[in-house]
Image (cartoon, rainbow, N blue to C red; front, top):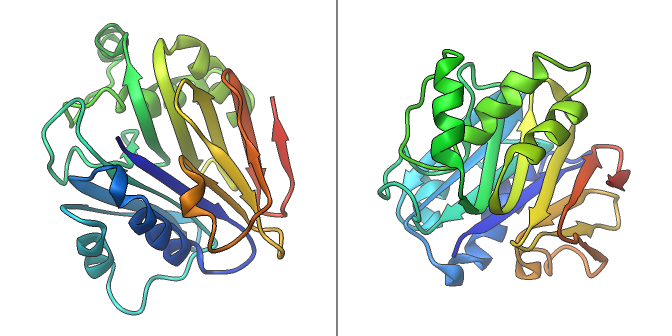
Length: 227
């Protein structure tokens, strides 16, 4: 099992909220952890094999300030437990970050199609096809939401996934099919997305569970929409 946590809001507590949420999910299993966050509009990425505390130590003290972050604690299903295979996974220019629970059953087929479009891969994981697909469709469509919707249609298997991108810094994107995701709404209108409500309980009791085949757009201004 794996854990997902993401934060978007007006406060610069995103990395702290995500890492403490990941620690609450370690009971689900772990062999590596990672977090991506915005720093003045660019994405910073830290990944570490081992417990979440190793990730916290790698991030340093004080914890980086950010109003947007996503993170993941992993129990390997594809690929060995290494820093490289840890989530988040990314596209070639690191403008799209993805954390994912579940198994993409057609990842080998998608991987070959993407290679034929000159995409290269750096991990052994099934998840890595997702940021490359998002990148491909982002170049073909007028909005990242369209790219996200097109990408979901290509995936077979089970997923709970969460995406951040410098192509749209005001939103996080999430989707569920067979792997749980829940949205928490805090009193100050920050939005926290997680694979397990245990990651939210320290911050809010107001939650919305995503249904299978739904995707979520979560805004920095506290608005959200389900599609």
